[in-house]
Length: 449
Ligand SMILES: NC(=O)c1ccc[n+]([C@@H]2O[C@H](COP(=O)([O-])OP(=O)(O)OC[C@H]3O[C@@H](n4cnc5c(N)ncnc54)[C@H](O)[C@@H]3O)[C@@H](O)[C@H]2O)c1
Image (cartoon, rainbow, N blue to C red):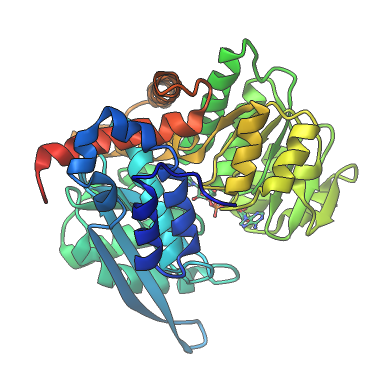
């Protein structure tokens, strides 16, 4: 699909393609933001004078390193580690670590680029970064995971710090991995520096609600979009892809708000359970026993497992993609719209292809892009950093209230910005423009650094 750029922006995009060959996901993320920015340069010519777009597309620093580790049999493996410190205009680099075999520089750069604008939308003092490894945690023992995390942190620690760069989890990195990473950081640096990682355990500097934050936040965001349309989750049939951290707490909050989630998935296929998913069972299978979602059908005979099935073919009113990038293509988006879907909230990062995004926007449904809808995770990480900084811990209720207020304010900012720039209801433009303007203003203030 041909991107639609303003004439000033087209050459900048071409330069990004030429400078970053083969990084298709990064190109896609840049395309999506740059398509929104034409009217911003008209309103703010100073951003063009200062070459803010060119500078924002170039990471401040990229670190690639070798991660050697030994499996339980004593065999040696070599993986590749990454940390892309993209933009520190608004605060220390902040963004998760992804451990997945598909990871390469293009994936980390797309995620880091998205993170700049997402973090800006939260209104909190955090810059954008992302990292990870092509290590596959699937099927590894606890001790193998520990040895890998220790080796990864042995190299990465020199680039981190509570005022410099603060990683968190993402796909394949949850509480267990953050524990091993924090333990090794503490050992090497001889510092109990809580603010250097977020997603920590509650006994050692973690925040209540961080585990739930991305899923809860995405659901709050969709709830706000529905409220604008004088609607709510009450009685709605919903789909949530994935069955990891984001998916599980999305399902929990949708249930609380009166919706019914009938399907979720993992990379093997999806589970359909017409009367509504049994969340406690999913948590037992995925969070505790680390099993596959197909095992759900062993416990509920009225549920159906569809291997390699396409979850988006199931009719629903609300869809919340919460697994991975590019999981909804143009055809899937058209199917969702045809089947009566009225709202899409992205828990995952860039789960919809540009064709899919166009289908949602043209259909005029409520479409909340990931950088706005899933910002609750990183926002609560920033709340965790606040608690660490004052050596305090807040209650669940208070922290959840803060999260909800942040999601309401992100929604309002995107909604109002879309109106201000002449595209009412277009949260893609609202999020891209509002996030960009915040970072751009800071970059202009700092001069050429
Ligand atoms: N964890 C966070 O706080 C956070 C914050 C913002 C955005 N995200 C994004 O949310 C998404 C999910 O992250 P997570 O933290 O829940 O990771 P996770 O590892 O806990 O879960 C990922 C889930 O997606 C499934 N999955 C992977 N590939 C799939 C595929 N092709 N089809 C169907 N399912 C697939 C996995 O089986 C797993 O259930 C990612 O895009 C991530 O970048 C996460």
